[in-house]
Length: 361
Image 1 (tube, one colour):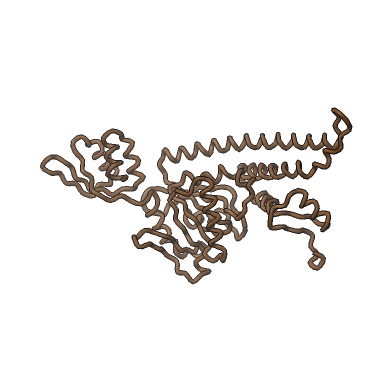
Image 2 (cartoon, one colour; image 1 turned 135 degrees about the vertical axis):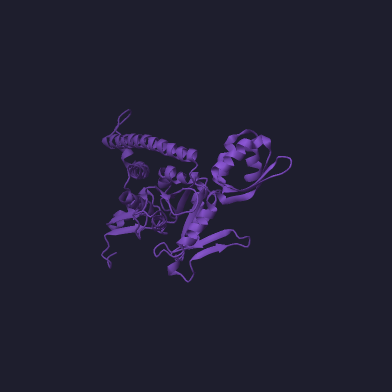
């Protein structure tokens, strides 16, 4: 510290309040642990009303534990039986003020979450597919988001540049309209206060038709960071959602941009460079193929009791050709999105059951 003329010490770990106080006394400068530093960065990056509420709630929960543990020496200042000294009075006042503020913030965030849930239900009623971008912080999610949606969301080469979830429509994909969501970046050993505060934001991913895991291909620790993201997805209950891995920053590696398929022809991964635009056409093909788990192309046999289903198929414009045999059975060749097939199940009765058995299974 003397050689560097350091005025601040950062500890890459979580310090207890007593440890932090002892280090400050011994070193004579301010000391920040990993949790406090990440909370401070989040506080600087938050822009939206919801983001600021979430960060403040996380900071207050962190402060409340340090307040109780750090000031326990004041509890000895008792006067006598039934008496309280000034130190204990101040501690109790601070505890009460913090608790009141935490309750107020929690109530306001609950209202925000109710509005968010209403938006999710509206999207589900409209059956508009949602693609969620997730990934380790600074993997290039926002740059990729801007490329796909032709937007101008802030994208910088820094940690946690994006805290507030953003949803935009992708206009350049073939087929039905698709929404793309950009979320907060993940990080190793994310403070549990932040995980709790941002849980509602992270759970936006649960409504996605496809989760796109953006990975920094040039990061030497990419395997470990990839595991961190998948652990968080598992924690919020999104581990079973359809997943597509996208290796970004391919221009900084020796790997050529493009699609990777397995032996069965299924897309395994996509290599792109969001900064240069290389591989974006391949990514769009992959998204078109994977959203809604692909398109359905097959023959379906309809009897006279399925006239309503036949009419709906023609109305959707998904019938490629039709043949009617001597018994009056209609043999239809159809090609449609799985999303449209799910809509047809709402016809109910024999029609809905036939769609479930023939088109969706």
